[in-house]
Every structure is written in structure tokens, then in C-alpha cells.
Amino acid sequence: MNFLITGGTGFVGKKLVERLTLLHHNSYILTRTPEEFTNTEHTTYITFEDAKKLPPIYGVINLAGESLFGYWTKKKKKKIKSSRIEITQKIIHLMKNMDVKPEVFISGSAVGYYGVSDDIMFTEETEKPGDDFLADVVVAWENTAKQAEDMAIRTVFARFGVILGRDGGALPLMSLPTKLFVGGKIGKGEQWTSWIHIDDVVDMLIFTIENEHISAALNVTAPTPSRNKEFNQILAKSLRRPYWFPTPGLLVHTVTGEMSQLVLKGQYVLPNKAIENGFQFTYPTLELALNQLFADVKKN
Figure 1 (cartoon, helix red, strand yellow):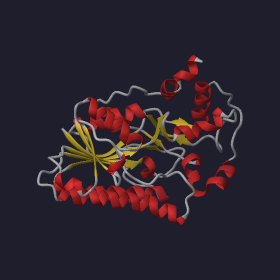
Figure 2 (cartoon, rainbow, N blue to C red):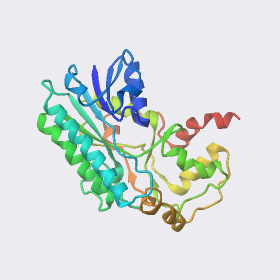
Figure 3 (cartoon, rainbow, N blue to C red):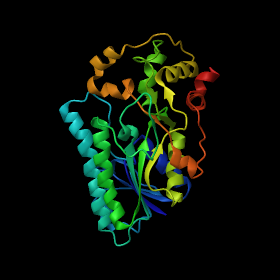
Figure 4 (tube, rainbow, N blue to C red):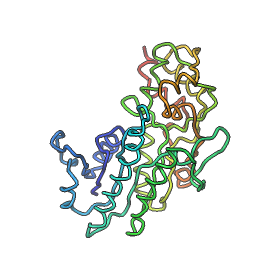
């Protein structure tokens, strides 16, 4: 089958393309600089102009968007939002002009939809969004992607949690203090982290492609969210480092500004839809996930 992918050169995108290739599918990866990449038998790098000449596409997967990391100036926040809306709108326009419409459209989203809370449990049945910046971004992002439903395309909003991997995502930054022997809870340590191992992310995306019963919101998170203090305790154990140096929330906010909400606040999100449809997690617990990711540390 043929798949059209944005963000195919990013952390999640590269892993997904690798899996699709192993399954003998063809990936057409949208990028502004296709000349910087090498095509293979199953992978082709293209521009939006090239995309007008594609063979029939079974699925479109949208993983593009400006990184959330960095000081949130007004310019940065505008780029975070506009990058997601604009690329999604381009994809909608592209699909409208396809003679044969895709069977499925998976649009990247985020658990930021729910806002933040220390005591509320969120599932896909939670309809009311939060009232902060990230929730506003996600609502606008999903509303743009929702236009695909008007073309009778099965549309999925993949609400990603904190994705854990050694070579990308949030973990390298999150683990740095612990690696430097100054690991500990951040702020009060009570805030929830709704995390997921990168392998389970890719497995869930493939599962979603293959399962036609899945549509609308899909929480791409592990079934066992962790409080920050527990997360960093398990992280320290996996890295064989001490856990003793708490980081004051005020310090984090001073250094990172509004972006600090990514680590000082959180939400307890459960992947009920995936579980109800029979998805099996390889790494359902944080200890399993981090032990696998830092297995080489354990051996030394």
C-alpha cells in the first residue's frame, strides 16, 4: 500500500517509515528539501508539487509541526500554532484534489487538548478541552484536520503523550539532569506525565491504520501515567544515578518561561480506545520502557 507522510524525517516519522518499509509498504515523504535525502525502493522524498502526481494513496499520516521546545516568545507561539494549521490545511487541499481519496487520515495531535490537572482522569470521551495555549493549539489543529471527514475519509486525531526514545523526543532533555548526578523531582513532583515508548507509538499507528473501527480522538499514551517524582526516581534507577536533587519550580519557570508548563504541569491520560480495540502494549509500565531504552547502562 502507498502512504503519504509529513514529518517523515522527524523522530516518530523515521521510525514509522522504517516499520512501513519492513511491511513492504511504500512511503512518500513530503519535505521542502527532497534533494537532501536518498530515495529507496519503498521510500520517496517529494514536495507538495510532486504530490499532485502520486499513485492512489491508502493513508495519509501528518506528523509535522514546529517543536514545542524553546522559550515561548510571541513569535515562537505563533509559529507553533501556524505551522500545524498550515501544513494540515495543505494536506486537506491535496486530498480534495485526489481522484481516489485515501482510506484513512491520521493527523498528529497532543494530550495538551485536555489542559492540565493533578486529579482529573482524561480519556477519549473527555470532550471539553482545556483553556491554556496548548489546548487552544490542539483544538484549532484538530478542527482543521476534521475537514477530511467531509470527504468520507476515516480521520484519526492521534493525541500523543510524552514519547520516550533514546534518539529523539523529550527523553534526552528530561534525562540530562539525572545523567549529570543532579536528578530529582521537578517542582512539587505531583504533576502527571502521560508517557509512551516510541516502539508502542509506531505499533499503535500501524494498529490504527489496520483497524477501521478507530476514528476521531485516539490517546497515544501508555496505560500507566506517572507522577513526576516517580518518573524521575525510576529514571535515576535505570541510569544508575542518584535521586536526591529537587529542582524548584520557580527556577524552571524563570529559565524556560511559559514553556515550563510542559514539565511543571501535566495530565493523567488513558488510552482507552486503543485498549478497547485490542491493542497490546510492549511497554505498559515506565520501568519496562526505561529499562529497555537504557539497557546498555544496566550492562555496564
